[in-house]
Length: 529
Image: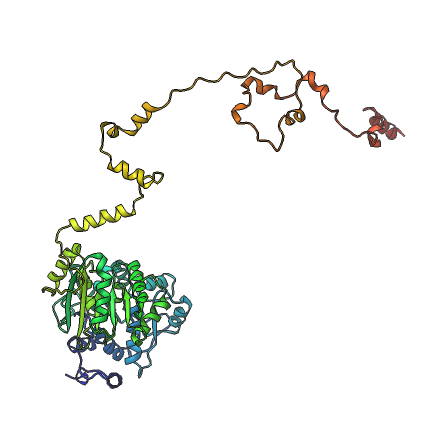
């Protein structure tokens, strides 16, 4: 089938033809006609099958007949990550270049002011992540009462990232009369429940079994010890004709470690994870797409929807904790009908994770070995992972007493345990504590009637250049003696007299005071006169 047979408009077909696409993928062939008819669609297809174009192409045709209003977008597309949202925006620019559609991209890491200005001019297509979308709505910058088409993309990823409560709130703010397109690579029960809640008599479009891997990807599994993982990765990168590759790690700090190791050994590698600044994330991703970076060490933020058609390899440096993530990771290669290879480097304690992956994809991942690197066996019980956790905690725990020399520690550890050694330390310390010494008799304080020693005389007892005696060498004072620090009345003569005005006494003080009755007498005399 050709794109011209799907019912798309001439301007959209012209843009598709300029890109070089002639035949639609199965998901596009089945979904596009239903979207053009205004029906709700529930699409389930493995990653890399062209789900994005299956809703962007018909939406461009639908939105071409209308006009946007200020702060009232006509369509809303929700994506779980910034990279996915940016990629959908690129698709609209690519296929909609012959339509006058306004678009706004609302993602974190970008300026609020620029996004608000676009909303105020009016947008036909609003592409957003749930967090930034709710921030702008709560600020009063978006009105959702004119939404005609709602797209929830990568719904299973939304579930993994905890966005489902935000999605439910956003949907509750939309008009009931709308068209909803719901796409997911897997269909767990929770996603199925949401689909039944959001969609109205949807057309189900399924082109492959849920959580199935592409047949164009050759899968391999290598089981080694933890200390051999980086050496195994370097060996594969050098000897397997790797043109470019995604290297996935489970933790962000492992991304930095693996990236630093590859750069140290001369590989052209970049790093990508969720804690990076948005501008740096986009810059690194664009460099990888352009070919200036050959290897991209990343977390699962790059496991969904990153459409780079010429990726030759995918390496799982860490076995994914969720089996669905394995499907999305290896789906970064073997896209658009091309072949690719996926290698998973597992440790013995990853047996349960590998078992869950093989159960999900309904096939066994072929094992292989590397000459010169010891191969291990998978452990399918929890003892290996538990021992690993205990070992990590023991390594991070503080060491023993550092005041002992290595020889003393060796002798102590080598000595046999005796009954005395088994005795509690507190008991031994209490028994070995020296007897309390008798209290030293106090030095008798001087009699009260002795002449008082002035401060200047007391100070002369110690020279400044000499060390003062210990605190215990001073004679101790009783509480009653502390009261004698104030001068007694019979010792007041020893102190200097108080200095007053001296000879300069003010004149008003020397003037005689008038009798109290004198002012009254003067007033009476003045009144009689």
